[in-house]
Image (tube, rainbow, N blue to C red; front, side):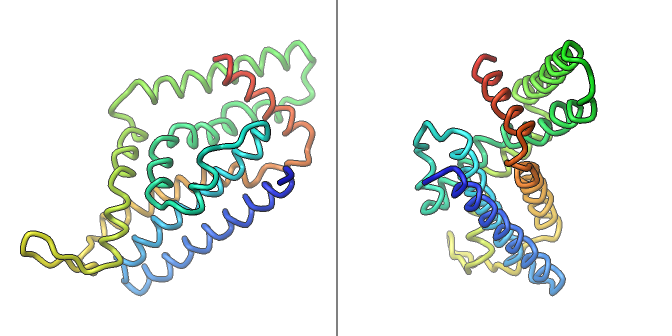
Length: 218
């Protein structure tokens, strides 16, 4: 598969994730919170698939083990989201702390531009190290939530029976649904940063190549 095909697949998959998200909002308006909650989890899985596809685009020299699993294994996708939440958030911060400051100062001299790139990357790396080190950040709390997302999805779709008790999908609390909506929305917004990049723009391609080299050496 050529690189352009990965970009096409990434865009189609992310757009489908957006459709699932919009469908969940329609169900929310009808107060069908259990099914809406489960659709949000499916939406996140589709977002994870999109992330895997664009990652394969970034690393064409490798055959990613996760690529085929992202089309087949729901559990794997949720585990992958949990394991790469920090990296996904990093792409958002990549825009805020690295890409946009450089673009805004594109007319700087080569010497100043290099200093700005180095400073921007250090800011980005400092943020990431703090998130990884702490157990009390919002990122850490999200990580715990993703661990239970598969069960929440199943509970929203099906009537269950456990230890003599029936569980009803319609019994989900509004606060739980809103937490799901918040986390999934944030996850999608991180992938959207990649969706909005112009992959025909040489400056974007150069920055991505630079980031790959810096991450490899960090």
